[in-house]
Image (cartoon, rainbow, N blue to C red; front, side, top):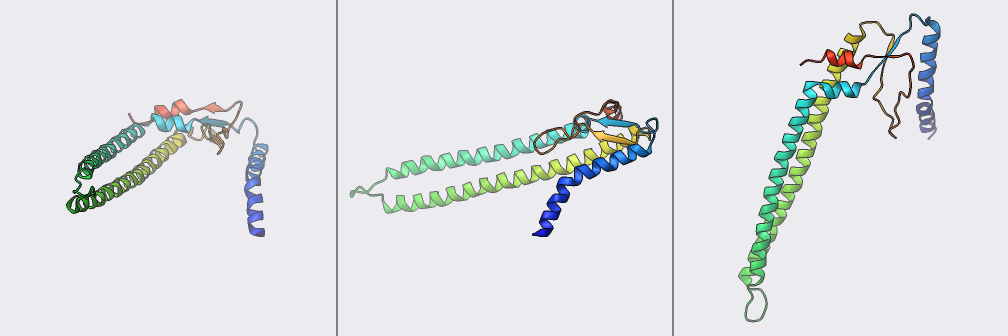
Length: 192
C-alpha cells in the first residue's frame, strides 16, 4: 500500500518537477538564446492528406458494416413475419400444430444465429476500425512530429503542443507569451 501512496504522490508532483526542470533550463540560458515555439499538433494532423484518406477509409468501412447489419436485420424481420404466420396454424384444440411448433423452434434458432452474427460483425468492425484509426493516426503523428523538427531547424529550444488537453478538457498550455506559433510552417511542409 505504501508503494501506491508514493506512486500517487509522485504522479501528482510530476508536473511540478517538470516545471522546475524547465525553469532551471531557462535560468541557465540567457533570454536571447532561449526561444520557445508552439504548434497546434491536432490542426497539423487534420491537415495531413493521409488523415483525410484515413477518415474516408474509416467512413467506408463503417458504411460497409452498416449495410451488412441492415441486411441481417431485414432477414430477421422476414423471420418474424414467417413466425407470425406460423402462430396462426392451430389445431382443432386451439394449440399450435406440431409441425408449426417445430418450424417456430427452427426459426428461433436461426434468429438467434443471426443476432449472434450481428453482434460479432459489430464487434469485429469496431475493433478493426479502432486498429485502423490507431495505426493511421500514429503514422500521421510521427510524420507531423518529423515536420515539426524540420520546421524548428534548431531555432527554438522548446516546441510545445498547443492543442494538448488534460483529462477534463483543460488546455495543457494555457498561455505562453512570446512563443512563436510555427503551425502554419509545419502545415506548409505537409505532402500535397
